[in-house]
Image (cartoon, rainbow, N blue to C red):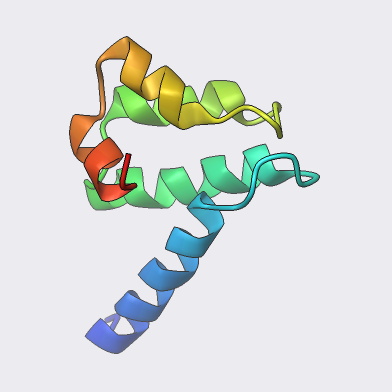
Length: 82
């Protein structure tokens, strides 16, 4: 059983990873892996996760404008502060 403190630490780490700066090598894949964590927790829709998947190989591509343009993931965009 995962205790709350461990869960909070894992979530904080994944939050940092989903916010990996654009353009860093492997950053798209890093953001996608972290997005998968939030999807599995129920914090992200499948449509939003799909945008992260599409952007996974594009280290300089910001998934957030694409999510906004598709009209999905409004809760996620609010959480991201956009």
